[in-house]
Each structure stands twice: as C-alpha cells, then as structure tokens.
Length: 403
Image (cartoon, helix red, strand yellow):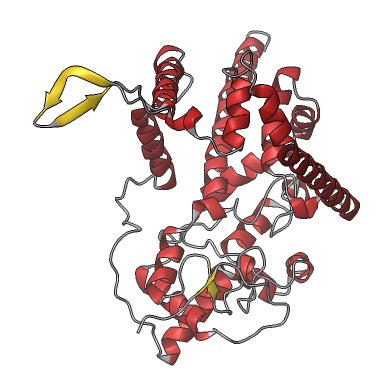
C-alpha cells in the first residue's frame, strides 16, 4: 500500500494539472460565445437589457441555465417560479432563443466564463478607480470629447452667457475707441522716424491704405525689356504673394518633420491600412457571408401567415432591445416614421442581416434565414403608425418613400 501512495499522488497531480488548462480554455471559448451572442443584452458586472450575470452559477443550477438559454419561452410557460420572476422583473420581455444555435457545450463554456469573471471583481475595480499617473492625460481626452453644453448646470450656463456678453461689450467698446483714435495715431505714425514701422503700416491698413498688402506701383521702366510695344516695369511682387510663399515654405518644413522625420502623423497609406483592418473587424468573414452593399429588390410581404411568422421571430429575437410592440427599449422605436439606417424594406433587411456593430445592433444572418429576415422586415413595416404605449422618442431622419 505504501508503494501505491506515490502513484496515486502523481495521478491526482497530473489530473489537476490537466483540469486547470481545460477550465481556462473553456472560459476563453465562453468569452467568444458570450461576445458574439450575449453581450448585446447582458454584462457580467452590471445590468444592461437583461440582468447582470455575476454569480448566476450560484443562483441557478447548470441544467436550468441551459434550458433557459435554449428556449426561455418554454421554461416560462412551464410555470417555473424563477423563470417567471425574471420575466416579470424585466418588463415581460422574452430572452432570445438559442435553441439550435448554441450547443450544451457552448452554454457550459459561457457559464465557465461568467464564473471566472464573477470571481475577480476586485481587480476590475482597482484598475478603474486607481489608474497610474501616466494614464491621467490619456483619460482627460475622452472626458473633454464628451463635453455637452446641455449637461452643464443651469447656473453655469447663465454665467457663461453673461460673461460672453460682457466680453463682447468690452471688445466692441475697444473697437469704437480704436476707430475714433485712428486719425490721431495716423498723425503720430506719419513722423519720419515712425513712417516705415510695422505699427505705421498697420494703422494705414486700418484707414484703407492697402499698399502694405498689395505693394506700391513703381513707374520705372526696365531698359531693353520692350517687346512688340509691351513695356515691363520694375515692380516688386505683391507682399501678400510673398507672405503666402513664405507660409508655404514653413508649412512644408513642418509637414516634413511631422510626417517623415518624427513620424508623429499617419500617412495616407497607413490610414488606408487602418481602415481596411477596421472593415475586417466589422466583417470578420471577409465577405464570405454576403455583402452589406449587395443590391436587393425585395417587396414587403403582405400575406398574413408570413407576417405572423415575422412577428413570432421578432418577439423571440428582437423584443429584448426594441420592445414586444416595437416601441423601443435599448434600440430605437420601430413604429414611427424616423429611421437611422433607412426605412425601405431593403434597408431594414440589410440592417437586420448584417447588423450595425457601432450601434450595438448584432448581425442576425447566422441565426435567421434570408426568408425569416424578410418576414421580420415586412412585419416591422406593418406596425408603422401603431403608436404603442411608452414609445421611445423618434431617432434619425424621416423616411419618404420613393415614387
């Protein structure tokens, strides 16, 4: 027995060493599945459209979570107390069904990811609340970019308006004084010692003498510069032309240093490559699953069975963000005349199929077939003007159908 103990210990150690990487790998896969399917409505640490998922593995068993993710409608219809409680708490909006889309293994990977994220809240808070001193300047830029006049307190807005008005009065008063004092200043600057100074030329310019900019014409003919009765005068280039030329030289040197010496600027080729990379991120398939610029000539479906099928798919998949009646929740109101990405059936079809990543609208081409997407698009058009309760304010531009 004593000889067997080391072997048992070695076996247990190897089993533990093999289990840890597997669990970590599950969490990595789970994060990918979560970002692709769940992030639009859920977060681990905070409530979004749906509840925060922190410690959900402690509150619910794995089988319950799997069934609810696959088809929440069935779980709610079965009378499950916990499912009904969640359904009532979050505005009676059903969770998107992932039956046939996510396997049991995918859901287990997501649970592993949520478990991993739930166990490390302290690190995330420390990073957010105590940034390094070197990052303070970097954080100041987003704060400045998010400035909004409407966000200022009313008292601050009033003070800014009053101070701006007073400054305008002061500058106006100084301008009037300057205009009144121009004749006196002109007499002072007309003295021989001051006649060619920059101040004298500036005063003359304010009084209408543009020779500082256009130059002075000289009636001096250049000898041996007469051709076919055309005479050439010995005049300097206009000052404005020379000043512009000097500015281009300074600009050229600054451009060379900025882009080619210090390389602190992005050249056109680098900008192009960055845009290509961004397009690749927005369309990871590389165009293999369709093109958002494809030409489509669909007509809205009007058959009752098609619209009913579109309604069912809408309630099952879209209601979480747009409301069961299309009134708008996180996403925009779909029952008014205003649209962010076009109100034609083909525009709606492409928005649903390819999504709008920058606005949080996920692409549904992997979940819904083209026929289902057209059914949902037609259903959305059928509820135009329905004016549901608690409808979200209009967003985008008013759509005018083409004749």
